[in-house]
Length: 467
Image: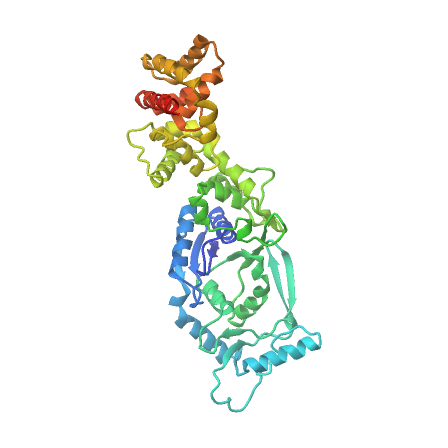
């Protein structure tokens, strides 16, 4: 049997953390078992589904490199197939027309609650006979078995048994003829040969109903694995206030896709105490049995830590390419400046994300337009002007503009002036970068380049003299 999994988002919003984790687990299980991964867009909710949401989902999948073997399939292209299955269920007596009005259903539920019963459809149209009422567009309900139970051997939850007496006759087609979720998902999984359904445990209540529909069609259900929900650090269901943003917002915020994937795989799955996994390791090690039964907690700090590790250890050429895009967004053309790989090497230990790296890299390519007020007040003083001027003379005479020679020149200048290293180095940093934070001074000078470094020192001295 070829393993076939699917990710089936509704295009009513962006691809969020929970959806991305579901997609990742489904993708990993397919890849780990040399199977196939299918993408299906469940867009039958025409009022809420949007083309922008479809694009956001596809963009997020592409950024995370969760490639799919088939799809995307769209449910709106399959309406004839759903109508065919609904008619089959009607013909074989496993579905029926329900003519109950909204008012009638509301009254029924109010009476049930008054009796402290579980509110649900009582099946009053199940065996209805006679002529249908005029002017009423009926819904179609599935005739759920009343005897026995549904047993699900869930690969995460374990054995789940639900008595059929607990399930009412759900609607499978609305009064306008459009199919409902529980019908379409069954037909799609059946037609697409899905062997394993990996999804959030908020769908667990739907599963017994879907199993009964499948069996009415003479089919056996796939293997189910219902993944526990993700909570915020306050123990409540994950939402925007916890950081449950669009996947692409993380891209805009400077996160690496491999860092987010690594974080997602550890969000409810584990392999011993290992924290960092390459994509290849994820595929090799992933099992459904490794998914935790308890909810997982989303930690922005942990995600940031992982991103820092990937920035430090990632391929400099690839990170340089990503940094170049961030610099372009800041109006910086890296051509003619220091090599991006060298800038990455200088900043990767100091950056939590690509945006921080890009902000710190700007002054390698463009002199500061202004100085940080506090830094200038403390470092660009009247006393600093002759120190910078003397250092400028020493640096201008250097033939080898490399970090070791530059570091030594700054140190020798401090000795020559009989001052501490900081009294030379700190004013120099402000002159070069506009602030007090930068990599090693030798590296900073080397990357900025001789002509630009000397010009920036001249500008700082002139600025001091004008104060």
